[in-house]
Length: 326
Image 1 (spheres, one colour):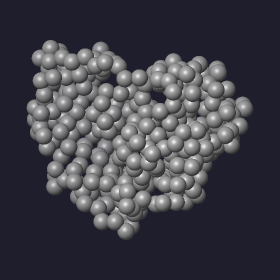
Image 2 (image 1 turned 90 degrees about the vertical axis):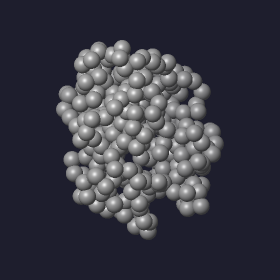
Image 3 (image 1 turned 180 degrees about the vertical axis):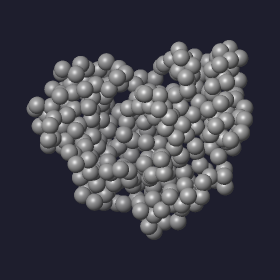
Image 4 (image 1 turned 180 degrees about the horizontal axis):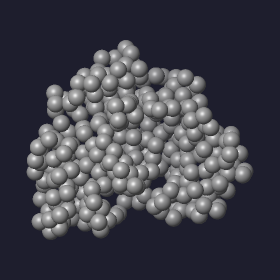
């Protein structure tokens, strides 16, 4: 995953200093996956190098089109500096690398009246594809900048409302999600989600939210448990289970749960039981700094797996060869 994007996801989704790695996004409303929480260090803005402060201000100025005042207290976590703005309406965040002083991501809310009308139209059209029966009222727009591992700038926007979120980048919709009130939940999908989650993990899931999301190649129902610690993704068209996550599983997550060499063997039983996939012949590649492994085999679906420190699978998702999950 690109560094800037996951940092931006943390700030947008949680406001908590976690180190996530997940296909799930903020708009989906699901708790982000992460390694064990570390204690963050707090400093005064005046204690930072002036060049770092100016870099933060510049990145927000470019997004907001005006100077933005920063709060006096900043947080430092995992060699990343997190700085927030003072404004109540135009809330903004900047994440910088503590060692280099480079901006990794920045985001700020702007008035929907100041947003590009074409952006708003694109967002509304994408939401109608998710749920044609609903009327969507946009409440706020977030402008975002992140940097990939090659320092290339990625500019995007997040259009948000009471029960939806749309992410747009390069004039295209990357992600659109609609959540539903309990009275509007699809009863059949709720039952299936509960049943399949229990069959996969042996645990029960107390459903707290449900919705539908679409992005490039995916069209899913998502069913989420209490506190976002459990979830299951079900294809909207096929009814197929594509992802199961259980972060209540015993043990804490950490960065060195398994080596690539033996990760496949620890995941095999879960893959066979839940997705009927034989991992024989698969090769695992660990995502740097996270207990996440991408397992691949030529001509076979890609399997993405999280483990905890007890070598227990806490999340597994499947991506078919054609990339289509619906």
